[in-house]
Image (cartoon, rainbow over all chains, first blue to last red; front, top):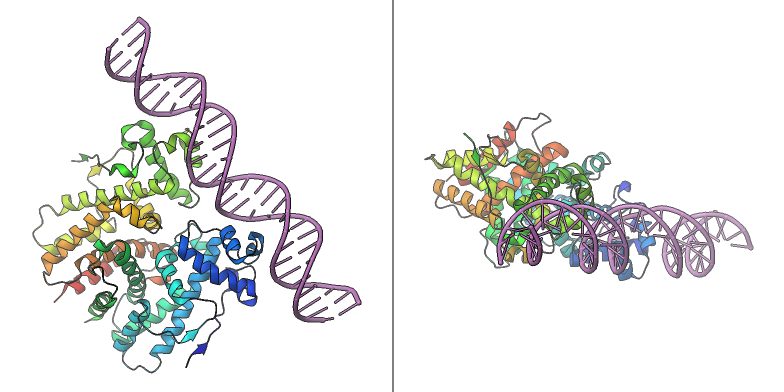
Length: 224
Length: 224
DNA sequence: TAAACAATAATAGTATTACTATCATTAAAA
DNA sequence: TTTTAATGATAGTAATACTATTATTGTTTA
């Protein structure tokens, strides 16, 4: 069984809702692909327009600039990840099992139950790993934050923090540990691929050692 | 007592050694200041040239582009941090004490013994927190890595990893824990300032809670 | 001391980026 | 059938990211 999914996004992320039209969905679909292929720095609306057979001006009707598109895309990912987390931890009793799910989700080690026609989740995950942090590492953080653009990321972080507190209600740093877990999962995957000397995972494709590292980090931290 | 310091940089980072001339040192000095003030995205060589009363073309004789300048600056920081680490852990016996020093250095909680005329270390630290990751989060990682541009970061990581192994020779992830510690220290400082809901540190300027979080993370991880 | 050299200043120029504006066309809704 | 909404086509601007050339100045060195 697979579920159809439509994620409702904060309207401040766009000028015109990209989910509402064919062109909008194409911007998202090919935007993800192109950013992944050439990197966010080299990515331009001009190139994207050529790619999908439209004009720069048409894309600017949907997004103020390419940074907003990146924020849209990464924010979409965090929202989707929270859905996945809710879905997969639904029937679980023990917080240890829930934490295992969190880690599996972050390392993309779990089957996706939701379908979204125009979004390739594997490529999207690649973008979040390589470019995701650039959505908030700008001089606009504070303003963007006030517009609640990062709410989905914070919500996810808070949900994970609550699971940590289930396991250890005394723990003093649930949110910091949650954001550390999220960031670390992605950064270590990046290092594994591009700067392996910063890790202990070797060159194999297996995510297993990373999963063990993250489990170790979190469970030891939450231990009394 | 304070020590005069000249850090030898990988020659591939620049076209002409900025340490060798007045203009070069000005590029570094005001470059750091300007990137800090307006952010790396808005930073241009044109603006920097105006700032220091020279021309764009002159700056291009020192650095291929602004990304190389950022890499130079952050790499300088990692090298300097390793010097600091060596200096401050010199007489220490117990690895626990050394780890405390590592954490204090990463959170900038320790007095700097080295003087470098044209570099403001506090501002530099701010850049490493806000912009540092952008030095390696690009499509050029692999090539830059082959040119050894990230060696100082890896050296620092390895040195910290070795301290971890002193405390627990059985520990399976010393490098991953070291890179996680470095990244987490900076990221949590960023979150504390701009996205505090992703942390548990509140709004006070104190670094104490962050230091405790990092100590907890590392020592628990290394515990048997 | 003059000639040679190195570093920088001054200036100009190009392709691309990051937009904004206008107007015509088409397809769907009222 | 008129209105409207979305897109396409086209044009244009300011800034960015460079490269190239030539003149000037200050320092070595023959």
